[in-house]
Length: 390
Image 1 (cartoon, rainbow, N blue to C red):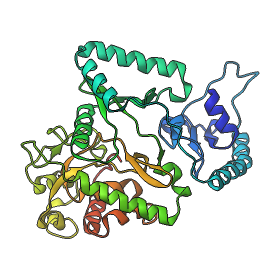
Image 2: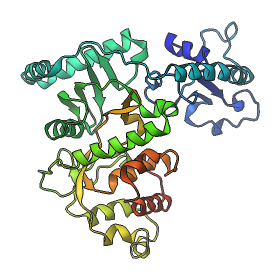
Image 3: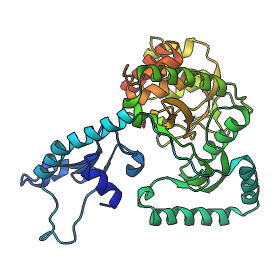
Image 4: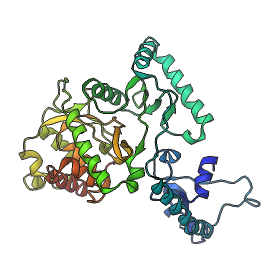
């Protein structure tokens, strides 16, 4: 374990699960899966930044030891005992944090509007190959010098900047950030530069939004704060829905090309020129599709006339940033684009399976306007031969 992980393990903020098969002799090794029988989980409610786990609530890691004789790997019962003993320490530290209330976020110097202008223009005259080399160097240096950021796709830099190693939708996220900055007053990262490495990856240099991801501090919010976050989110959604679509397609990504969405893991459909084409795409894997297209809930997607508007498309709580219990920023715009109006709502509910308690903020923001569309989306996902990414 690295120093930062070791510290949070001692305080009970994370725990390790070890498969009993690793100590048995029944030979059921094939049931271990890709995790090798070891799993690290983040204790809930959270009292530690997910950056330590690269933004995830769990990860798989097969441990090793330099000398199995003198320093053997821990037995399952020891790990279970650690979990049971230290969960009390974890909850005690969580309660202390709640009693302290919302603490001010320490913010250092930022480059400001003039600094952004100068840096953008300076980087724009540098060749792409040089910028790729530069960003790779920065990425590797931070991995080496700051263990808490090692392996993270987003590296925090001085002057209020961050560097993101993007995926195939790097161009789309850069376009989305430009659109939001040009047409909205909401608090989103400001694009400084982006460069494409290949069709699968690239870099985005942007300003960062300091605050707490909502999923990390949801347990600390009051019901009144949650309701206000939902109302403020509704205002922001209404604002970026006004962004004009200047592409030649009705439904497209922020850059005017195919749609980007984690729901379509491994493929980029579109662009499309009608909401019916969009519905055809998301329903194409449903069993007995032709029969269901004329019946509810699927028929609603074809019979109702929908507006198409700019959509964030990934309003997961980890992308909603709060300060002092209030909405402060929205991040991770890589899936943004122009899509049917209902998509923002159903896409936000999907990671939580529509659970009423987990999705109360979204239902405050949207009301019951798109409940029928959520029912249709749930039907699609439950009646397809596979479940796509969340």
